[in-house]
Image (cartoon, rainbow, N blue to C red; front, side, top):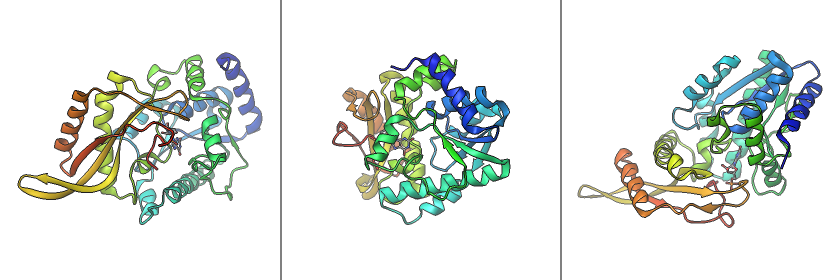
Length: 305
Ligand code: XMP
């Protein structure tokens, strides 16, 4: 286990040294990793830090407003790039390809913003399991393997590269970040796109976003899982009124894990699952079926793509 106080001292020093007096852009997502990075960098380089939040159009319900409230005081630059991401994703069904497209879009947005703000460095909250899974070819992490090589930054600084998630949470505590951030569920960089099987369309994003909000509302505080969410599996047959219809199949996933590298499904009581099914199908009429995913990791991953 890392010594959080010592880590903070060393990381602050590292950021100061690596950035050499230049401005540094950070991709702030509101998750614990990037929030810890931003807090370290704010200590290290003060207003040479340029925090940017990209609304990719693949964010959770209410997320952009929440981030604005939480980080507005840091002079946060909110880039609304939903159309740009969704257009780039149009027609793409292959999971790896999706990740690459999203990773590339992210970098392009950041290059643009870096140019505008005259920043030459990029700070990222990549943690140890992200690197291992990318290096092992398990998946392209949007902030590692999905990154196009012809980036225009002098350097990418990754102060959390050797930490596990629980260590990052300890560092968040040492930095005095709010509990809400310290204990936030992980949310993947490519966002809701990896919770949609096949092509990402605005309609599918809207359905999975709504279903996800219901799942979080019902499960987060009651079962305190490492992660819980909804995913969109595809279309299936259902019955509405007297008619057979095509409707979306939504999977509910809730897992416990230490570091995201392995995970076990949470034993949600049947009554709660029935409540989820009933809420999701009645509040989102285009959903015809809800299933609960009981697969551990391995063999399944936590996310769907
Ligand atoms: P998987 O699906 O690979 O996920 O079992 C393990 C953990 O990593 C998160 N995850 C990501 N986080 N960028 C991220 O920042 C990504 O590209 C990414 N893909 C998966 C996932 O939510 C889980 O906590």
